[in-house]
Length: 579
Ligand SMILES: Nc1ncnc2c1ncn2[C@@H]1O[C@H](COP(=O)(O)OP(=O)(O)OP(=O)(O)O)[C@@H](O)[C@H]1O
Ligand SMILES: [Mg+2]
Image (cartoon, rainbow, N blue to C red; front, side, top):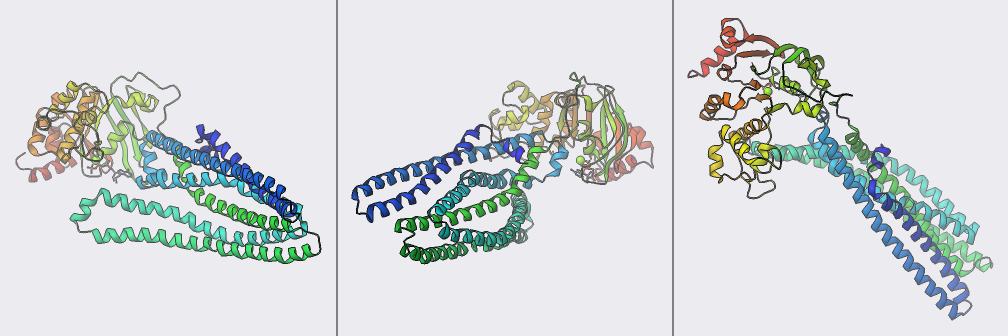
């Protein structure tokens, strides 16, 4: 995990190295100051040597200024390294997510991916900054101060050793408990994000069904959980402060008590005692810092793990060793194909064997959940079959180059998505496009009116997410744009999953009328609930509970009066009398 994350530091290695170097320089300067102070008191004040006071005083100012500068530089490089590291993490995660197959994406919920890209990265960024600045500084400060203190007076300095051990024991009791809470805490963030995301994206449904109270309660619960967990953890962490103060003041008291006696006995100078008191603060503060680093590290450990999961997730749709690059459109054969969605033990498709040739138009019909959309997803390789093989031109589709293979399909998915950018870009799915081709596709998909309304302007932005002048499109309009997208791509295979489900009867009729013009002589798989709309496909496959139960032309299927097609057709004919 550390290796995976470490690889993301990249161009910020230099800043990451400079930070601790400057922090150590700051510590060294800080440590010199008490020594200079001792010298001012002992050889300046006590000896009445004003010259010495000026000289050492000036030196002290110089040392303090260098310390200040080193501290500032350390902070600057630390901030640069940690924010840059976070930027690289987000970039690499996002890039890796783009390579995910559907089964990779099914593993993580959307809200979890968002938490990982935001909250988790921020945690790791903070921890990284803290580690860069403190991980070297705190132990260095503690060790140097301890050595200095011992070199001044070993017997008195052993008081610090006792204090460090005492504080260390107390912290080792507090911190692991706090850690446990922190770890649980970040998992709760997923619930909170899921709650917000679902609510905001479905706000209309929430309002229409007057579910605000329920939603508020759901959110409050997730929010309260985080509050409770934070409170528990913080309650433990705050004990640190009084504990630290008791120890510091205890030390000061003991040093003053024994120190005074040692001075009276003539074994310690006043200046040396002042230095010892100054080191006291350094030692104990450093110990506190070390403990805070541990808290920070364990807080970010869970986050780091979640980030590295996203980074190391390997897409399971990989190109084979020597991919077949030249993909010609041709016959497609499903050979005993079965498929289960990842993590599901129910087969969505079971033992499908089907063949269709170039230029054929196949309609797939069946009830909800019968596996129609799954069939299309397997065909264009969004998932690989669990069992069986799909062949194109007699070659297993897994042997083709993935990008090349995908280029063969113009698809309108059932859950098509438009993006918040220009109309033309949405259709062409590229920033540069031939305006003529895009317009032609839009007209074919029945968007002529819409185009006219918007002055034939293909740069009209859809939705208002990024552009306040964007246009909101209706469900039907959106579907027509998705259809135009498939038409515009002009790939040799056209896969249409309920492409007219949101269209009004007139628009649907227009599409059917122009269907042959739309798909031309390309191989087409057409899914529809509207049985009558499948009639113009010569070949109809009937799916039921993940199996292909019938196949044939409309007429031949209707002859089988005990078959599923007959059942669906007659059931629908009752409701669509006019068809
Ligand atoms: N991402 C998924 N993860 C797990 N199971 C899924 C997933 N998508 C679909 N399923 C399951 O697979 C089965 C077939 O779904 P599919 O979407 O192929 O049906 P469909 O025939 O297209 O239905 P509809 O007519 O409603 O579009 C369903 O039982 C569904 O619960
Ligand atoms: Mg479907």
